[in-house]
Image (cartoon, rainbow, N blue to C red):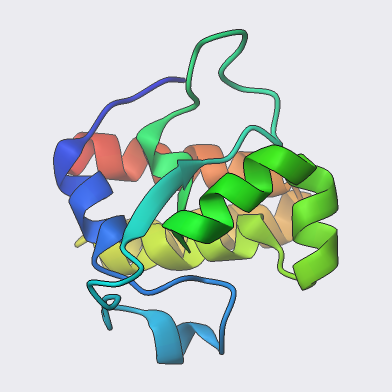
Length: 132
């Protein structure tokens, strides 16, 4: 699923880097002009491909310097170093972006039943696509 959504990318870029603080501290705070926030497309979940970005709904906010560092280190090593779960960041952002909170509850209930991170992520992406 390789959805493109400019509104969602703008939403992600309005957040400060997900590496610092808890979600309530970085959600919708923006970043300084000295270190702009970029939306990094996570490749950890097998979507995308060679020269193909994953869905825009699988992005996380990073500073420009952090983004370069991630590409230099590789995704797995980068996230391990900072002890951040990018899936948690993606789900937090999607949950804040989606207006249909009832659909989010259904997605989380399904997740709890099946315990599948990929299923939860796919369900949240589909909700966002329906609203787009």
